[in-house]
Image (cartoon, rainbow, N blue to C red; front, top):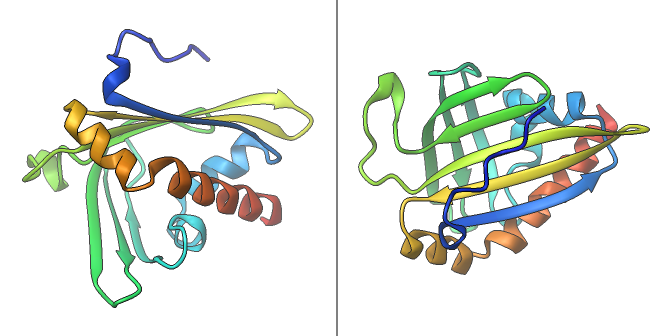
Length: 160
């Protein structure tokens, strides 16, 4: 698997990288199966209540989160690239049928690399349109929230 080019401006990117005790096949399955993604995707006290996924390049994704006060937050997007068990690229810049979203915020690039003995090097790169968007995402506790969710992802992948 080739690595993601590093020419993207670092001041517009957030990265979370870990070696997880689960196979890349199981981690990929947790990212691409609606019934599994609702079990791990959102750090408490938020919950993921719905996931509609058409996992293919150009396919739509709509994951709905529920806040502790009962507000729903649908997150529609499009898959840009899907390489089974290796890579997922998605963005909120488009919604269904390649319709531009009201305010594009990010593109996510997930890579899953086998490091042997059922372990996977998991890298989540989140690229933003502006430095202000990256800063806003960081203030939303990107590292903490995505870190908690990644722990939940690993735990679920170990059980399936």
